[in-house]
Amino acid sequence: MNGLDDFQNRLGHLIGNLSPSAVRQLAASAAKRLRASQQQNIKRQHSPDGTPFKPRKEQPLRGKRGRVKREMFAKLRTAKYLKAKGVNGDAVVEFAGSVQRMARVHHYGLRDRPSRGAKATPYEARPLLGISDADQQMIESEIIKFISHE
Image (cartoon, rainbow, N blue to C red; front, side):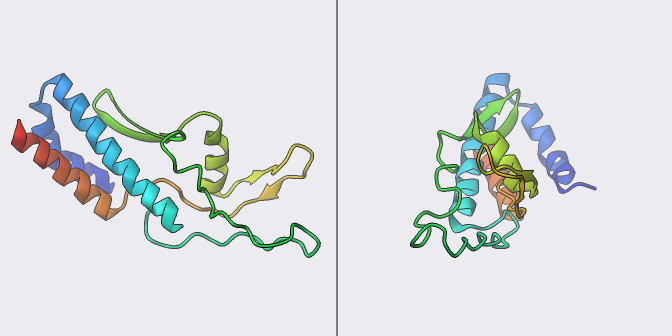
């Protein structure tokens, strides 16, 4: 049984009693909180389950001089690319625009071309989005707080 099924069974009845506009508002606020959690995971360079990302590959000896000064996915975690919205009562956190493809390659560990003329390179799997137990509890408390104010 999926962990979200139990979650939905417990709170589904309470959410079902809300008006459609209240459900949209609840979904949007839960999505924003979930996005903040995902941004913190990406900033800490950890997957949603708490394991650290695999480090970058070493650069070739005659490659760029100096160290890489920016952490991985620094721009990817900004609100410009990581969108949070409430759609039809669902809280959605997704990558938007042109970065979806790059995020999918890193999330699943696929092969991609780093530049136009380069050969395809395998990437390590670095899960960017996901729901942890702490996220489930946070969403649960957000729902309970929202319902208690209704």
